[in-house]
Amino acid sequence: MSIQILLTNTEQGLIYSLVALGLYISYRTLDIADLTTDGSFTLGIACSAILTSMGHPILGLGAALIAGAMAGGVTAILQTKLGVQPILAGIITMTGLYSINLMIMGKSNLTLLRVDTLFRAAEELMPYGTLVLAGMFAVVCAVLLVLFLRTQLGLSLRATGDNRDMVAASSINPAFTTTVGLCIANALIAVSGGLLAQQQGYGDLTLGTGMVVIGLASLVIGEVLVGRGGIVRGVVGALIGSIIYRVLTGIALTSNLGASNLKLVSAVIVAAAISWPAIRDKILFYKKRKEADKEC
Image 1 (spheres, helix red, strand yellow):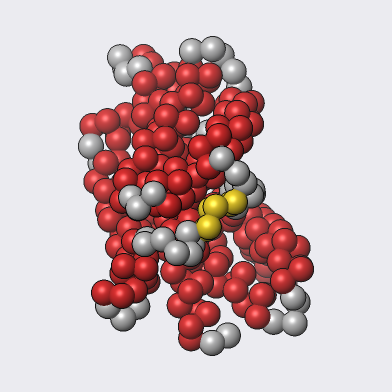
Image 2 (tube, rainbow, N blue to C red):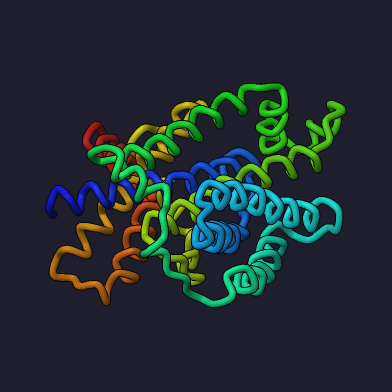
């Protein structure tokens, strides 16, 4: 793999790390399997692409942020007010967002090749400007997330994921904290989609397919490397895991496997990452049993 390809994959890993951060809130903190992710990621792409094509790239990211938060709010309302199961609520929102995303963009694919984007401006401003820009967004979002989760509201959100009944008994409204968490999570995911559209120079409604699985794989890869426990470790793990996932995907593309097998390679990486904790526990178990048999 060349240095340029490595830098490009690292850059995309930093962009996708916002998806991992969003899933860290919904999946790890709130303990909710939120399938809105695929739809909100594409929603961010649609908002960013259409406004960037009109000459407003910054406004496009702002619109992606707000739209993603609204999508998370819809999922939260379905769960907390209408009694819909979390997985079904995410599927309903994701399904509805497909039509909304198509209405926003007007077509399934929108090119930004001749349009000024934040990444094009950063590239002209300094060497490796696009990588610096992606890293800046990832680091700022990570720091803000850590600071938020240490506030009173953030502590309430974390407590909701640990024990919802205890939170309700402590005069904290779990419906409110769930809504806040899902809004923030999907806002981050939508911003990731908005950044990707500007970085790649086009918006496509199929780019969000399987995003929830990729984000979870990034989380697990990060946890394998840095371990679990503590907000900072979880957030840093999400960033590192996302970068490593994209680099591994890039290596697969540049090898003899071919681009046509990318989905298969991605599935193998995701399956290996998610199943690694169970495999590791079994390996440790057999090692301990073997040691015990020797002592006997």
